[in-house]
Image 1 (tube, rainbow, N blue to C red):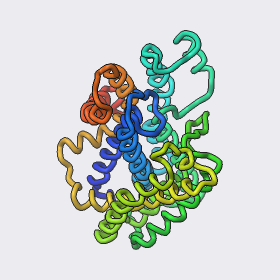
Image 2: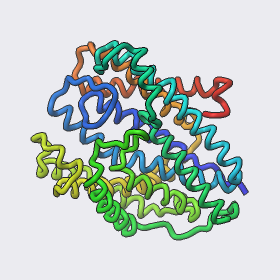
Image 3: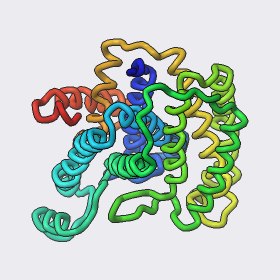
Image 4: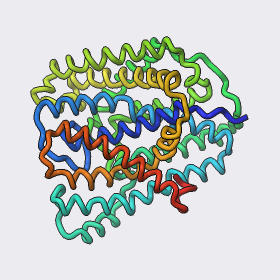
Length: 379
């Protein structure tokens, strides 16, 4: 028996991809974070607001994408079995990963070099030779696709070794309430703080481009996504729990985070203490991040299920193109923000206009690419 399509899941994924684009543009125009191009012309207000924006989104958007991806993978495995499941996953994840790694990523360095946005020794062909003769995978945003591919292999291996049969009907179990969600947030906060003693924010495992400082939540959400599918949690999470989670999220965003920034010295530039190490700021930030992340995920799931569970034409098109938009948005952002870098405009306004133009552009080009003959089976 095939489960009915959950349109709110499609809509949630679309919004999360838009937030990914917004965060990368936010870093471009003054927010804290890592990105290929930073314009550099900013002021304190812009930096504070865009950093605030990035901190809030980072707490939940990728974790929610992992949760939804795992949720959908379970049903896919049940329906297809291990052989077809792995074949389809390698096609959908592996081919775009390799295409980005060996075509898009090296070529998008050219406009950055030409604009003087990055300094390199030697010519562009010499840079390409060095690039293709060194081992790396999962460059740029494709670390997410790489991680999903690893999860695919691990999950399929567990199912095969455990001889788990295909299950067409979810075994409903009671979804977590606010207390359970907050308890898990505290556990993840402690584990995240401990992880960042060794892997502070900004550090990445080079060959695979994995920022391990965030992976406590990501791994947890992959596991939660599997259990959410088995227990049918997404459709049964109570409205009361969702509403309470959003109330907690508002308090964490509007009261706790500003207080943490002020008391921790972030406004005076003492940001490194939040990134990791034996600092109370690092512990408080990790705890805030994980608590907000979990309540935001639960709250948004209920909100979208109750309010945005319709398959409108534009929503369906955006959802179908969201994966492609994620893959191609990096070169679009690089080329367009470089082209507009000499436009004299206040950074916050420039950020807002860039979001309004480049997010729809990424989805529109994604829709066009997705319809290409060779891309239809993959994207």
